[in-house]
Length: 57
Image (cartoon, rainbow, N blue to C red; front, side, top):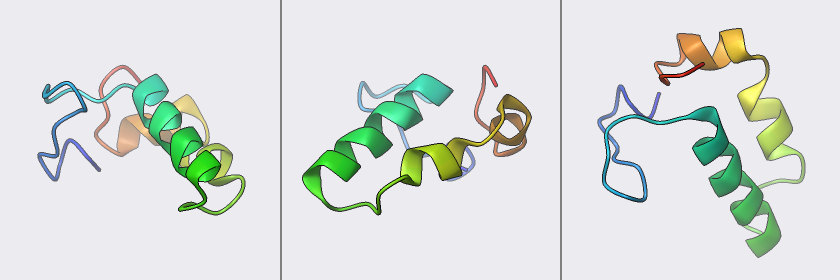
């Protein structure tokens, strides 16, 4: 979904990898701005990540 929205990665690239998304969700959880378990439920299986337009899934 991030790639479809043309949202750049933290380093300014266009390709999002599952590990990058997980790292950001984990960070948001630690900061208290994402619900607990958001990274586990949002990523799901690698097939699900691939259908979201994230490369490498």
